[in-house]
Amino acid sequence: MKYLGLAPFTLYVLAMLVVPVVLAIATGFLDADGGFTLDNVAALGDPAILSTFGNSFALSGITAVAGAILGALVCYALSGLRPAGPVRTAVDAICGVLAQFGGVMLAFAFIATIGIQGIVTLILRDQFGVDIFAGGVWLYQVPGLILPYLYFQVPLMVITFLPAVDGLKVQWAEATATLGGNRLTYWTHIAGPILAPSFLGGLVLLFANAFSSYATAAALISQGAQIVPLQIRGALISETVLGRENLAGALALGMILVMAVLMSVYSLLARRTERWQS
Image (cartoon, rainbow, N blue to C red; front, top):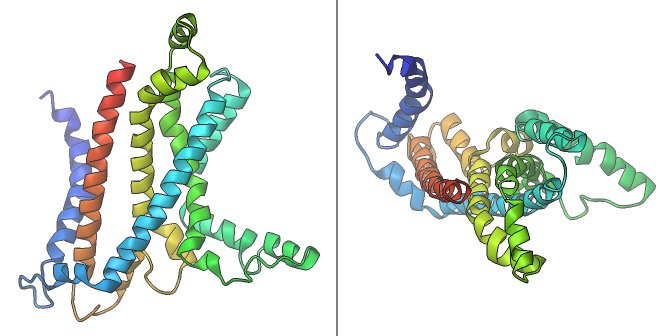
């Protein structure tokens, strides 16, 4: 009876997570007639698909590193403010909103602002003679996803990393100063090693967040399948891809394996962070 309260949550996880994952993986091993095949999984080794995974890794890595560094700097600036102060409260609230502000709304905001006919684009072109699309329509390609992704990556890092920064004890800095250490000594020998697991955990989380993002990329990149989520979309809406049916299931399997590794690493880093802060 003591586990009865978990029944609704268990049913929700089964219906919304476990069953879709199992179905996605299972379809990757089926052919058009419903028989077992490894052709779909073998397709993951095709150069076109490997290139797509490479684009996803590059995009996720760039936005994760940049988002983690910028977010950490914001956390450092916020650490000197009162937790209940107006600035800290406002930034916390804004980050909570922006971290979830993705998808079509975010894509539309960038299109309306710095798109080919965006407000900022027209002002720069007409008033200052600067054409930000002189080198091509980069906003609608993989490089153009970096700015929109950073829009929600940085706030997510602030939310993730700020509790670790707040966990630093004033007594540690005072003890360092008492023993003759300076600020550099404190950050390189005490605060840095303590915050490292939390920072790396946030970095992994940001990488996973970017790697699995779909809606923003789908709204900006309407042609081609330049990253894995868009390639899964292409496999679902087309009858055959590279002569293989159910390729979407194999692509989903590849993404699930990557996410499983990332979440395992994040769990290990989270436990390490809890050990320091306990």
